[in-house]
Length: 253
Image (spheres, rainbow, N blue to C red):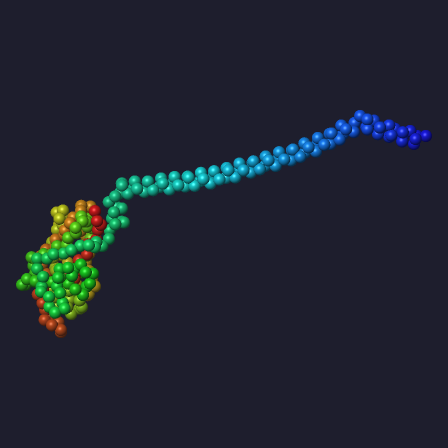
């Protein structure tokens, strides 16, 4: 009896659902499904947008970082240029002091050439110790002069002299060398220098001759005193005073 009532109750409940609620239940199910789909789509769209914004922010961050680096570099460059302006003399000394080329020389006299040997004053500027300028007057050449010139103003810091005729040891010993010399630049800078006697080929002497950032176009050298040559097993001494090389160090103004 109880079993029959239970079955009847289930049937009546089912009929009630069919008549009043199954459409609603179906609608609710479909609505929930539609909302789930829309939620999923909206969430995906939001995530995509967020990803794009993150990438955009990341790109902007990279650009900003790059811009900052550029700005820093530009600032440093300006600072460096400012330092160069404030310490122009020091920068020029450190970065531009070099052996000057494009120079030419003149002299008050030259010994005439002998065979293949020339004694031109230009020999002092040929970077060859096997050649030399040899003065061409009687005696040891006291009072003779040579001048090194530049078409452009140059600032001089040092002068290097390869004294004597450094072709070989015998020639070096037989010929005279400069003992004292007066150096005068076209800006009025002047200095009297005593040189050591050279006993070995390849030796030079460096003279601190600073025109203090004044551009000059010529430097004149006047022989005041000399070392005499000596007889050797290969020949007798010569009274001619010789200079193998003269090199100016500084920079073009």
